[in-house]
Amino acid sequence: MEKIKILVAFISRQLRTIENLKAAILNLDLNDYNQQYVFALKTQQLYTAVEDLLKSIAVTFENNIDSAQSYHIELLNRMKLDIKNIRPAVISDDSFKILNKLRAFRHFVRHAYDYELDKDELLLLQKKNG
Image (cartoon, helix red, strand yellow):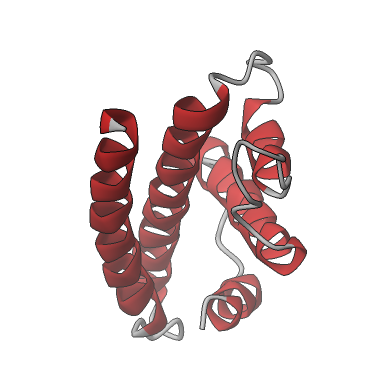
């Protein structure tokens, strides 16, 4: 029971963080070049906050995900599962699609250090977060 109380407290805090990041992202003017980079950073933080929340759920109910290579996508896939007598599905198929796009964007931002951001792609992501 203590594990559940800790998880509930963590989820509550994480949801506030996620909502604050989402609000910040939605209020950015992506026509401003500098705000495009703020968007990239905040979006990366947003997805990381969501992933940390999902990891906590996985650890509390199912233990860890073993595959280091495909960990991030495996975590999302696992959260779509309704696991009888353990936990309901945490995310819907629609949420999975959005989160998977954010996951891919985070990977891009972390690893594409010599690439310019595409304003149209950023606007599309911003719209999907709305």
